[in-house]
Length: 283
Image: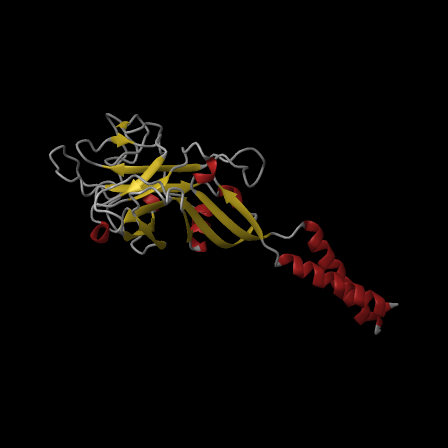
């Protein structure tokens, strides 16, 4: 009798432990089902910052985000707070889709770096303007949050002056202050003037440590910078979260080991009790 209890308990324990190693997968992409709680996910923020004749322009309403040189940086973040308490993060993959913009210099390949934006720059919002003057609260090259009288500065920004020719200390430009110096990931982009690569998917692994940080701490997201030295006149261009085709919007795929259901814990407790009972009975 007690041999049977022991076998059953061991079997239950094995099944329960096996359940702990199972993986689940979720996707954060605007317009698709929210990973937890039902409804539609709408937690992506993205825009590109740039300066030219005006460094207080917002692009949050555009269907494209691009980085090309020292005066154009992509900001991107996903609200992953719903992952809190769901389990142990195992992997993360960022998906971006190429948006051909043409460009000069023909077709060539150059790298782009993805950096983690510093916590001090958390709180930026993409806004809804389309290459228009930033409205209060919207992000732009000069400010984390624009306001005509009391704007919020980027962490690395120095004193602002309209006479500054490059606005070089703005636009999340200061390594170690505005963004973490070591890249999260590096990709390779091919400028395609023919348009053949339109919609090409970039699948890029993002460190689990970054995801855990964004779940439990400030979430300032990522910055994508084309390698200025190699890009030359080219730029990396992707569809944004405002693209009409949902499938082409930026996406973050997460795999995790779910927290075991309460019943699993109960099974383990029963299994342990059975084994203890056998020992006490001397079977």
